[in-house]
Amino acid sequence: MPTQPVSDTFVTTSRLTHHYVQWGEKGPAIVCAHGLTANAFFFQAIAEDLARDHRVFAYDLRGRGKSDRPEHGYSVPIHAADLSALISALELERPIVLGHSLGALVSLYFAAHYPTQLSQLILADGEPPPLEQGRGSTSLVDSSHQPPGDDSPIVSRIHSTPEGGPFPWTLLE
Image 1 (cartoon, rainbow, N blue to C red):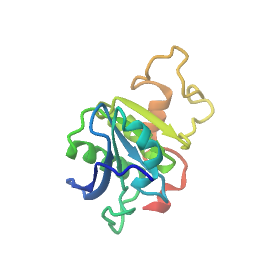
Image 2 (image 1 turned 45 degrees about the horizontal axis):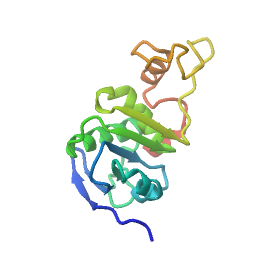
Image 3 (image 1 turned 60 degrees about the vertical axis):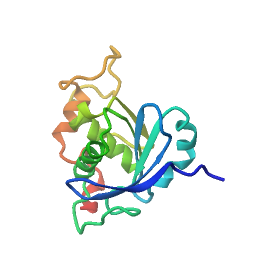
Image 4 (image 1 turned 30 degrees about the horizontal axis):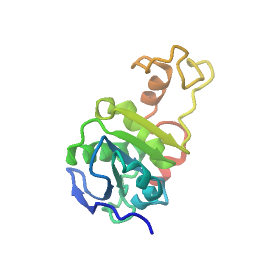
Protein backbone atom coordinates (compact mmCIF):
# COMPACT_ATOMS: atom_id res chain seq x y z
CA MET A 1 0.00 0.00 0.00
CA PRO A 2 1.39 3.45 -0.90
CA THR A 3 2.64 5.66 1.90
CA GLN A 4 0.12 8.35 2.71
CA PRO A 5 1.34 11.94 2.37
CA VAL A 6 1.82 13.92 5.58
CA SER A 7 -0.20 16.70 3.97
CA ASP A 8 -2.76 16.82 1.14
CA THR A 9 -4.00 20.39 1.02
CA PHE A 10 -4.08 23.73 -0.81
CA VAL A 11 -2.00 26.89 -0.84
CA THR A 12 -3.25 30.20 -2.20
CA THR A 13 -0.70 32.46 -3.84
CA SER A 14 -1.09 35.89 -5.35
CA ARG A 15 -1.76 34.07 -8.63
CA LEU A 16 -4.19 31.22 -7.81
CA THR A 17 -4.88 28.28 -5.51
CA HIS A 18 -2.76 25.16 -5.97
CA HIS A 19 -3.40 21.71 -4.60
CA TYR A 20 -0.26 20.03 -3.27
CA VAL A 21 0.80 16.97 -1.34
CA GLN A 22 3.80 16.57 0.93
CA TRP A 23 5.73 13.48 1.92
CA GLY A 24 8.43 13.63 4.59
CA GLU A 25 8.86 16.14 7.38
CA LYS A 26 12.62 16.63 7.65
CA GLY A 27 15.52 17.53 5.42
CA PRO A 28 15.88 19.68 2.33
CA ALA A 29 12.76 20.46 0.30
CA ILE A 30 12.15 19.05 -3.17
CA VAL A 31 9.37 20.64 -5.24
CA CYS A 32 8.02 18.43 -8.03
CA ALA A 33 6.32 19.67 -11.22
CA HIS A 34 4.43 17.01 -13.21
CA GLY A 35 3.78 16.53 -16.92
CA LEU A 36 0.85 17.70 -19.00
CA THR A 37 -1.55 14.83 -18.32
CA ALA A 38 -0.52 14.03 -14.73
CA ASN A 39 -1.12 15.45 -11.27
CA ALA A 40 0.74 15.75 -7.97
CA PHE A 41 0.35 12.06 -7.16
CA PHE A 42 2.46 11.19 -10.20
CA PHE A 43 5.47 11.51 -7.89
CA GLN A 44 4.18 9.23 -5.12
CA ALA A 45 6.35 6.23 -6.05
CA ILE A 46 9.63 8.16 -5.81
CA ALA A 47 8.43 10.43 -3.01
CA GLU A 48 8.21 7.48 -0.66
CA ASP A 49 11.97 6.87 -0.96
CA LEU A 50 12.94 10.55 -1.08
CA ALA A 51 10.83 11.32 2.02
CA ARG A 52 13.22 9.39 4.24
CA ASP A 53 15.52 12.42 4.26
CA HIS A 54 13.69 15.13 2.30
CA ARG A 55 10.45 17.07 2.41
CA VAL A 56 8.85 16.32 -0.95
CA PHE A 57 6.21 18.74 -2.23
CA ALA A 58 4.33 17.83 -5.41
CA TYR A 59 1.74 20.25 -6.71
CA ASP A 60 -0.95 20.22 -9.37
CA LEU A 61 -0.10 22.63 -12.17
CA ARG A 62 -2.80 25.17 -12.99
CA GLY A 63 -5.66 23.47 -14.79
CA ARG A 64 -4.71 20.02 -13.50
CA GLY A 65 -5.80 17.92 -10.55
CA LYS A 66 -7.46 20.01 -7.87
CA SER A 67 -5.69 23.32 -8.65
CA ASP A 68 -7.54 26.34 -10.04
CA ARG A 69 -8.49 26.16 -13.72
CA PRO A 70 -8.29 29.64 -15.22
CA GLU A 71 -9.71 30.09 -18.72
CA HIS A 72 -6.33 31.05 -20.18
CA GLY A 73 -2.69 31.45 -19.21
CA TYR A 74 -1.07 28.05 -19.69
CA SER A 75 2.28 28.97 -21.25
CA VAL A 76 5.57 27.76 -19.80
CA PRO A 77 6.49 31.24 -18.50
CA ILE A 78 3.16 31.45 -16.67
CA HIS A 79 3.64 27.98 -15.15
CA ALA A 80 7.15 29.06 -14.05
CA ALA A 81 5.73 32.19 -12.40
CA ASP A 82 3.21 29.95 -10.61
CA LEU A 83 6.08 27.78 -9.36
CA SER A 84 7.88 30.86 -8.07
CA ALA A 85 4.74 32.01 -6.23
CA LEU A 86 4.17 28.51 -4.82
CA ILE A 87 7.72 28.29 -3.42
CA SER A 88 7.29 31.71 -1.82
CA ALA A 89 3.86 30.87 -0.37
CA LEU A 90 5.19 27.63 1.15
CA GLU A 91 8.14 29.62 2.54
CA LEU A 92 10.66 27.18 1.08
CA GLU A 93 14.22 28.43 0.95
CA ARG A 94 16.00 27.40 -2.25
CA PRO A 95 14.44 23.95 -2.70
CA ILE A 96 15.56 21.34 -5.18
CA VAL A 97 13.21 21.55 -8.17
CA LEU A 98 12.35 18.33 -10.01
CA GLY A 99 10.36 18.46 -13.22
CA HIS A 100 9.00 15.68 -15.41
CA SER A 101 7.98 16.11 -19.07
CA LEU A 102 6.13 19.46 -19.31
CA GLY A 103 7.18 19.97 -15.68
CA ALA A 104 10.82 19.62 -16.81
CA LEU A 105 10.34 22.39 -19.36
CA VAL A 106 8.65 24.57 -16.74
CA SER A 107 11.46 23.80 -14.28
CA LEU A 108 14.17 24.62 -16.83
CA TYR A 109 12.52 27.94 -17.63
CA PHE A 110 12.07 28.56 -13.89
CA ALA A 111 15.77 27.90 -13.22
CA ALA A 112 16.81 30.33 -15.95
CA HIS A 113 14.45 33.12 -14.83
CA TYR A 114 14.29 32.61 -11.06
CA PRO A 115 17.80 31.26 -10.29
CA THR A 116 17.88 32.51 -6.70
CA GLN A 117 14.81 30.45 -5.79
CA LEU A 118 16.32 26.99 -6.20
CA SER A 119 19.41 25.13 -5.09
CA GLN A 120 19.43 22.31 -7.65
CA LEU A 121 17.51 21.30 -10.75
CA ILE A 122 16.49 17.77 -11.76
CA LEU A 123 14.95 17.26 -15.21
CA ALA A 124 13.29 13.98 -16.23
CA ASP A 125 11.97 13.18 -19.70
CA GLY A 126 11.92 16.77 -20.89
CA GLU A 127 13.63 18.12 -23.96
CA PRO A 128 15.51 21.39 -23.53
CA PRO A 129 15.12 24.17 -26.08
CA PRO A 130 17.40 23.44 -29.03
CA LEU A 131 20.37 25.65 -29.75
CA GLU A 132 20.43 27.03 -33.27
CA GLN A 133 23.32 26.17 -35.57
CA GLY A 134 26.04 28.79 -35.33
CA ARG A 135 24.72 30.33 -32.09
CA GLY A 136 27.16 29.23 -29.43
CA SER A 137 27.77 25.77 -28.08
CA THR A 138 25.45 22.91 -28.96
CA SER A 139 26.18 21.24 -25.62
CA LEU A 140 24.20 21.79 -22.46
CA VAL A 141 27.24 20.88 -20.39
CA ASP A 142 29.96 23.48 -20.17
CA SER A 143 33.35 21.85 -20.78
CA SER A 144 34.76 23.52 -17.65
CA HIS A 145 32.04 21.81 -15.56
CA GLN A 146 31.21 25.14 -13.90
CA PRO A 147 27.59 26.20 -13.42
CA PRO A 148 26.51 28.35 -16.36
CA GLY A 149 26.57 32.10 -15.87
CA ASP A 150 24.13 34.55 -17.38
CA ASP A 151 26.32 34.77 -20.47
CA SER A 152 26.39 31.00 -21.19
CA PRO A 153 24.89 29.84 -24.52
CA ILE A 154 22.10 27.80 -22.92
CA VAL A 155 21.04 30.57 -20.53
CA SER A 156 21.18 33.09 -23.38
CA ARG A 157 19.11 30.77 -25.56
CA ILE A 158 16.47 30.25 -22.88
CA HIS A 159 16.22 33.99 -22.24
CA SER A 160 16.00 34.79 -25.95
CA THR A 161 12.88 32.71 -26.53
CA PRO A 162 9.88 33.76 -24.46
CA GLU A 163 8.44 30.26 -24.41
CA GLY A 164 11.72 28.39 -24.26
CA GLY A 165 11.89 27.19 -27.86
CA PRO A 166 9.90 26.02 -30.86
CA PHE A 167 7.56 23.71 -28.95
CA PRO A 168 3.76 23.61 -29.19
CA TRP A 169 3.30 25.51 -25.91
CA THR A 170 1.24 28.20 -27.58
CA LEU A 171 -1.41 25.51 -28.00
CA LEU A 172 -1.73 25.51 -24.21
CA GLU A 173 -2.52 29.20 -23.91
